[in-house]
Length: 327
Ligand code: FES
Ligand SMILES: [Fe+2]
Image (tube, rainbow, N blue to C red):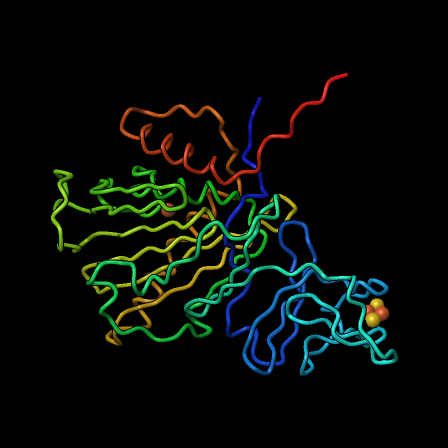
């Protein structure tokens, strides 16, 4: 039987870019099969709640608006705070303290907005790191523009699982065929813990012997996964440095929205280098859209180790199997 991984993984998942939710904005979201509303108060704070008002079920994202103390329902004007508490009923002396709209934990980082998802309702098991304090010195010491319209690309409802995207990073031989690199890259270093997968991968003859040299990042990609929803790649190429985030979030219908963000160093030849950075992902998506999940793939020795390690790690993010009840 094919055991496709759960589409309800635990972790942080991107649901928007900051620029799409300015102060006072209210927008609908749909992820993990839930209708939600995202809004930003006039104080700049972003909140995500389940979409439906607990009074009579109106969708807060469809006509609701930001007021001083939260979001006001378009149907009878009840006001819900960013934590989902009812703070005002315009025609009653007191709010309803018993009912709550489910709030989602939100982190906003480097122009991206994430929610915490866990089917068991646990509080966040880890925090998202800021890549500007995380990646190697050659990456973090560059100047980058804030994410503008050209640096953000949303691929909606792609038929892919986040794990498949993670597997792409440990799949050395697809680089030759999908991305036209002359030889397959090699993994130079790798650290894996419960929530993080962190690797340095070398490209070209410079790294052909597979031996890492600390401080030498030329022709490397530093890959950092924080759960299976958040992936950052710090790439040191001959043409400059770039950081690419490829964050996939399950919609709830077997597809994912893929949020791709691009930070390109400096300003020389910027437009061309941005175009090059954006060229790779559509080629991957073209494969993923039509790929079938293989529970037992036919892997060669040079690829098996990475795949199995990645799959073992990914399993830690899936909800426990339902326990069969007998009798
Ligand atoms: S349904 Fe929201 S106030 Fe009535
Ligand atoms: Fe790829």
